Image 1 (tube, rainbow, N blue to C red):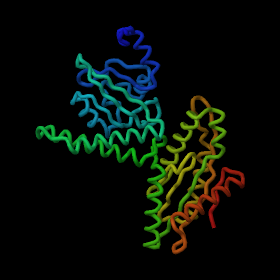
Image 2 (tube, rainbow, N blue to C red):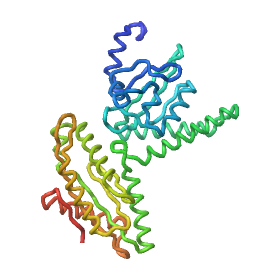
Image 3 (tube, rainbow, N blue to C red):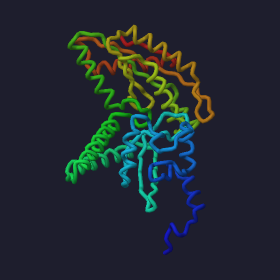
Image 4 (cartoon, rainbow, N blue to C red):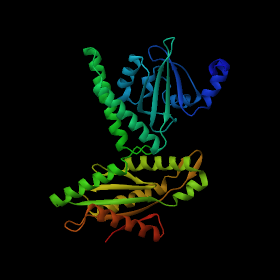
Length: 322
């Protein structure tokens, strides 16, 4: 049977690369950008002066990427990469492949599903275990391995606690934070409130425009919430189109003022997704922690019930639990 690579011309391979969902780049020996497919062209739009692969990554990751390139080894890692122009960097499965002519191929593919995310976490964990049992050949190699192992551990921790779609704390993390805040409020008799936010009529957005548009709506809403809450308030994705805001040292009145502001803001900011203007509103349920009466679970249930009361009262509003 004829070799697949031999059967394809360079032009054929170029067309194949342009139809692949991932970003693909050919790099020089020093990591300089030589040529790339159309998906990477979109990523590079926000970095017009970038001449080196590390320049396209967020500043906090550039030293780590430079180390990967200098090693010139086949490697794979999870990193934030700008797969879409004008959008926040997304969690991507990154692959580096050295070529025989000293060039390298870099591939970045967005992680879209929880199952894919779990698979990557498992691979990172196995890789970490290999690092721990691998014998060290020299002091320089030992130092490089230690740096790389710490980076892998940090990435695995980040992946385990961050929602891959919105980059907010995921359900497990925000619930753990809720439990800690409840224990703190109980111990020190301090104020604590929560808000449960649910996007109104989100199913109709998915049905009308499709799930990719629905996902982008969730990403834009998450970004707005993250930038709108004030320290030390924390917002996380509780599940689906539902978000949870923790408000330490705040009573229900303060939480209601925040909810009113968020309702006005999301109502006024009509989202633009793939040239579709999409109006979005919230239904919000608020509950203040009752010392000596509430547990974290009962507090969350009261806020959730208040959110459904807001839904039943016409949506686009907030309700404070009794």
